[in-house]
Amino acid sequence: MAATALAKAPAMPVPSSETATGAVSVHGVDVVFGEGDQAVTALSNVSVTIPDGALVTMIGPSGCGKSTLLRAIADLVPATAGAITVLGRSPEAARRERNFSFVFQDATLLPWRSAIDNVRLPLEVGGGGTAPADPQALLELVGLRGREKALPAEMSGGMRQRVAIARALVTRPKILLMDEPFGALDEITRDKLNEELLRIWQETGTTIMFVTHSIPEAAFLGQHVLVLAAHPGRVKEFMRVDLPYPRRLAVRDTLEFVQITARLRQLLEEC
Amino acid sequence: MAEIADRAAGLAGPGLFRQFDRLGDKWPAFAAVIGIVAAWQFVVWAFAVPTYMAPGPVDVINAFRQESVTLWNNFWPTLFEALLGFVFGNLVAILLAVWFVHSTTAERAFYPIAVFINTIPIIAVAPILVLIFGNGLAPKIIIAALICFFPTLVNMVRGLKAVSPATLDLMRVLSATRSEIFWKVRIQSSLPFLFAALKIASTTCVIGAIVAEWIGSSFGLGALIIEATYNFRSPLLYATVFTAALLAVAMFSLVSFAETRLIRWKAADVH
Image (cartoon, rainbow over all chains, first blue to last red):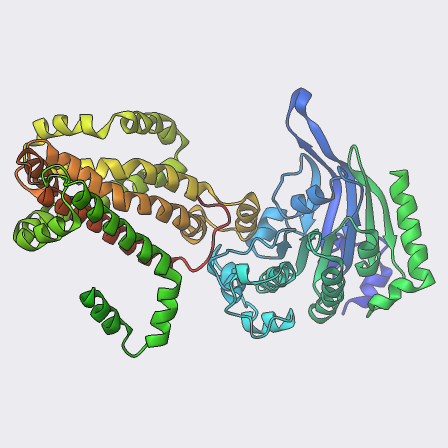
């Protein structure tokens, strides 16, 4: 390696490599919906860098644009100003190369397809994917062994969301974008899926951006918590959560955890 | 009565208990039918109603026996017209719906015309078509098709559009093409809507064929209805009406059977 050459160089980050810009880099991004008098500024001058392999949770009051930020990264809404790069590419190029997957609040399974056929969907459209994961193994990873043939109508909300996660992982994405994926689930199911998501994150090494409106969920999952303020949506703080992994649910009863959630609550009140 | 008992015993056969279970569900319907037929026969007998005015069930059964050749010969043209009308009317409706979903201009241009055509009473269209196409099968098939057309068009357009925005977001993240979205999502999600319309069409196409045969036709169940009425052959009239009803029920059952084979999932909001 050219370690000596690097050491001699001035202490400036090299922006061209993936690790230097992070998995996702958002720089001075505005998102404005509508035009003229009707224009609504969803995001204003948002800049954040998501490190490669990180698990970043995003939280903020409603109207802070946390979902909009995620959707802008996923090329679902265009940025009005500023620049977004995903693994050094534009969001559109990253989407076409299947660099990221998206998990919605609603599982959005196709109701006529069995669990395993829903997991296979990404391989059948948009040119498929290179080196896909084994759908069967993924269903086992999310704890749905033996339910491959079940139709969405025969599954609980938690099971449907597990299938959606398996579907998101089938293209082996480098980045997983999750928009309140457990928001519609009951607390017990949500706790369980939180623990399992951490396990999947550690097993796959995927970078995860996770939008939530639950303070405990944001603190429990996140290596970092991105706190957004509303009207217009802007970055309030990018906070590191100093709790070791693997985290178990019991960590939420510790003093450290309570201090972190108290700090988050305080930040959100200032928004 | 002995005949009915014999047939019931024959039906039971090896699966005796299962047959009993099924009969257990349906006995109120059977009892009601038997009750109504008995009451009908009683009223005709008790008030000495003349046969030409209202024949009793026994007269109608006799008509079925004596006129079986006439009924059979007139059954086939009506079946043929109804079936072809069903196929063409629904096919045109489905293709038009596909076009409407892909082109807003086409929908804006032709939807009002489709609504207008639907508002013309079918019985008023029949003479016009007979004048244009003569006395053959063509006008009957066209009328049967016309009567099927509109409900299928409306339902199919609705079904093709009944894809949630979240599902479309998912397909966009997967970089699916328009044709992939059409074949993998829209067609599938339209099927329950389509079958709701096809069930309506399966009975109305028989009505269309019969109404068309009323206008100066020399064959078909519709012509037989007119002939029997004018000649006061009321038992034959009733037998013809029952034959037409049986045809409609058979068509409906066929479509229902196809539906259960093709759609194993339940749509949320079809009606």
